Amino acid sequence: MKLVVIAGIPGSGSTTVLTKVLEELDYTHVNYGDVMLEIAKSDCLVEDRDSLRKLSPDLQKEVQENAAQSIREKSEQSNIIVDTHCTIKTPSGFLPGLPKWVLDQLKPDMFVLLEADGDEILKRRISDTTRTRDSERLKDIDIHQEMNRAAAMAYAVLTGATVKIIENHDNRLDEAVEEMVKTLK
Image (cartoon, rainbow, N blue to C red):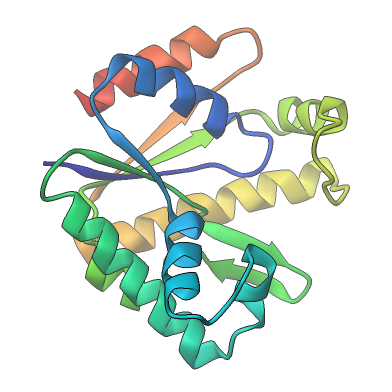
């Protein structure tokens, strides 16, 4: 069975592409943050998602490791797509979305990065009134995508996984879906 990590910065269309791909392939979709929340709730550490980031670093690390182990166990029964972030942009810099201790437990086979041109992402973010997002300049969006590429390759070095970049341009959703389906078959 395969364990694939899919990531894209906000506005890249990763959720939209993934939704369409799952209509065509037999993969189980797992959101990494949801698994972390389930584990933290079952251990009576938090009541909601916002409380996760308020846990001590040691507890956060423990929850991250347990989530990765849980996902890995699920991948022994079925193909899994893990929806997560390669990097997280914070006021003090970028954080790795998948630190080494997570990768050691998760052992992914492949990383798929969904990308779009920076101006496309900017337009999507502006037109998406359902989300509250920090405003970013085009340059910041491009840097975030570059950081994702660098992180994905570093993760690949640590795990032996492959890295596939799929472009999701405006009005070409079907092409991105088709390429991802072909990649995951």
